[in-house]
Length: 285
Ligand SMILES: NC(=O)c1ccc[n+]([C@@H]2O[C@H](COP(=O)([O-])OP(=O)(O)OC[C@H]3O[C@@H](n4cnc5c(N)ncnc54)[C@H](OP(=O)(O)O)[C@@H]3O)[C@@H](O)[C@H]2O)c1
Image (cartoon, rainbow, N blue to C red; front, side, top):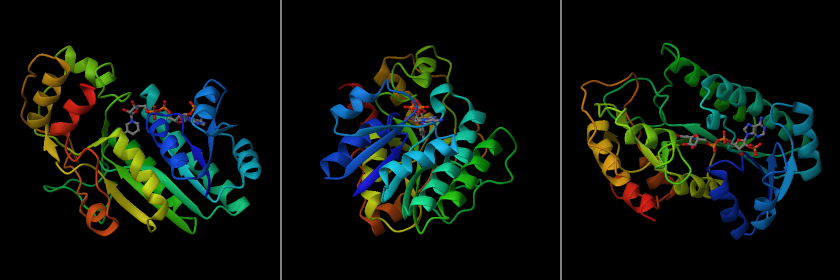
């Protein structure tokens, strides 16, 4: 299949591109400049230069490539700016969908989140509504996700990958990553908040498998939603940080998500089924 990837040079994209090439697809990666060209051509991917916020540039890229499928892994989380990220979700997604319509691209696979569900006491399934009543800053995230999801649903086929909290090499939860550094300094407390984690390789592999999945949202999270009081001491120990301080309570909506549908209906099988072993395996490599 001829595939254009938006966000192919990000932390998930870099693991996903070689997998797509290995499956025999003809792959193009949209990137803003040429600093990743050597990496891209090295893994058998053709770079296409365009800013996702520029609708004319995106359209020109799609006209050139004529893709059958677009994989949307755009984020602006490298800069840890929620508003910038909402912008890329809203405007970037709109531009990808409009360009797809213009050239007849029928399918989109898009990165979304499994932690914007409304509050509840058990891990959320895909039919739980998003948390539209949330106050800011959570609401910025919820609204951005909702717009992304409704925009991609304008195409004839769309798979919405509601990813758990990413960990593994190059993520915020790497030893050198933003959260890893805070944990090393003893700045993160172990609370009752429930998190569903996802190893970055599982995020990448799910996007490849999603080429064969039906339309709709699907939670891509590991098997073991866990409270901070459970996972943080394990994470801290693996990265050599001090024992974290404990605190009661949790933030709104921190309930985790269920991967039952992905596993039972789509046959998805995480490479790293739980953070409990995943932290150790990925950081001790
Ligand atoms: N579910 C989660 O928990 C989750 C999900 C995603 C990310 N994260 C966290 O966020 C951190 C950063 O992730 P990342 O490396 O994927 O993010 P990133 O460095 O911000 O960039 C992601 C991708 O989006 C592309 N992009 C961004 N703005 C663009 C624009 N205007 N036009 C075209 N392309 C654009 C980038 O392409 P170019 O720069 O090549 O143009 C890159 O390929 C990670 O460490 C991870 O921990 C968490």
